[in-house]
Length: 141
Image (tube, rainbow, N blue to C red; front, side, top):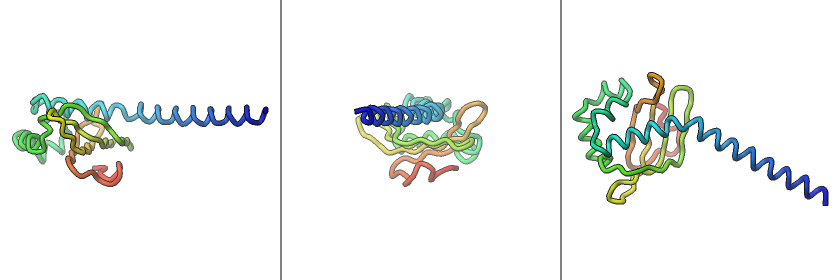
């Protein structure tokens, strides 16, 4: 009977350690997720200029505000309601979050947002709407 007690304690210990690792990963990547959700919320509220300012300088250098607004409307992110994230990664000063954006009309679209650490926060460097890349680390730009 004592052997079962030790086995049960071992299983509980391994489970607690795995839970702790998952919690740590979510905590370490929460800033990137928060930045992505803030960005999408601003777009969904029609605050294009404010959302545009949360993008990285390189992003703004290759996309003017008018093009940004048109693109967000074309891919329907102007109807953003909420998001759920299926994967996230942070590597050095780069991050990527992949998930599903729920739109106000109930439609759901796959989305992948890449970011770079910039001025103490996260700045969007790229957005892919539609068919996702195969892995969370595919778009480390």
